[in-house]
Length: 271
Image (cartoon, rainbow, N blue to C red):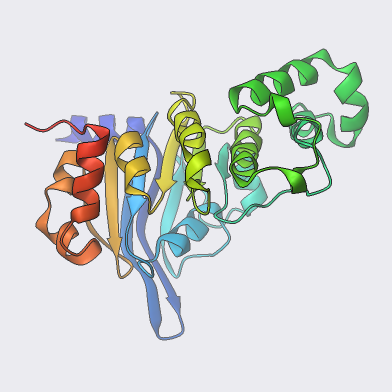
């Protein structure tokens, strides 16, 4: 048993252990334990008010837990500031865009890549002078289907492109752990496919925790799922287990029609 425990610990990149978050008399997160494995494609799902956003805010340092601890690559980061967690390789996208409206995608990525390469405030100069910055920006623009709009101000981009830019920014930070907070939220149907394909093609060595309501994306992307209800982990397992769990169907999705449609539509293996 000890050998198995050691192996699991070695394969875990991010761990939440017994997290509790109380706001006055309300317990928003109740003894949550979650382990993100190296290279994971892990989905966190649950109904509105389940505590998903609170949990992500705890993981990223926006909130300090009432109880419990958070371990990133073997180090206790429970009290570490959010920007220092980014520096340790844990990056988050947001449900609502956090972008500079008057910058173009190229300028935005040049700023992030320059900071990542320790060029700091010299990013304007680096955009033209640093081949490494230019090459990395070109790679990201192509990877996230932004080349055609790279010189347009962000404020005029289609919403799907804005979401793609946000994920590109996150990847420009060279994360080892990436928390995707509802990447397709608000994206029109006509722009979703490009976004879904791009998320599916994210680097395999980046461990990803996906927070999402869209069951098509959840079941096409994730290899492991955690279901959160009323701030508590209801169950977790592989997509097939979650799809067939009566408690999930009853508590999270009523009769489970949305899960069934996603399973059939995205080809989740059974048997």
